[in-house]
Length: 235
Image 1 (spheres, rainbow, N blue to C red):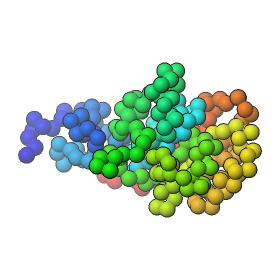
Image 2: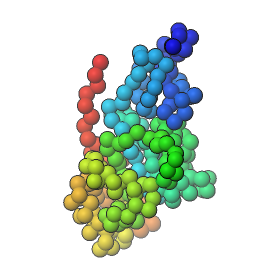
Image 3: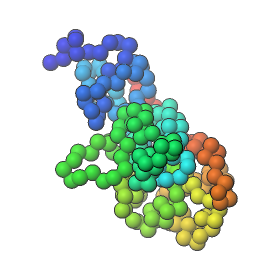
């Protein structure tokens, strides 16, 4: 039974994280939910997000700036979970100059950052997505995705999401020479035909010349603007 002593101070959120029930959110009460609270100390503390967004990131320079789309999506009412490719995980864990801090991203979202398939006996630590944002998306991923390859967790989730009819936005990042390969145009056409909103070209990502990438010019705002509209908050 919940007692008065179990209830957190009124000026903090006080809800447990789904992947670590022993830890409680210490953000100020009334903040927009940034993590899915599956249980609470008291019914008065139950908060339900309006939508779950999977941010699926590939190994390209903008992966160092994932906090930008996370915060932007949270401000729009999304509960964000981050999934990265094995190459991004390697950058983060083996290159101290990568600028990718997986622990900081987990703290920001309230969920562990996933990069590999779980074992059959392990629980799923992430809620099911209502929408997915694949960004940055490399030419390797666009071609594997269009071919239905699922040899990583990131690819497995986004290939399945097409069949589940989830809204998917993809924001590429590759250079002009890579974009000129005939497989890329064919893969983009395949994904668009399957309902994926690929933001390639004017108004989205325009491929740069080789070795001239500017991660700070990456159009995160275009991806955020393309997210589906969430239902209004209820009192």
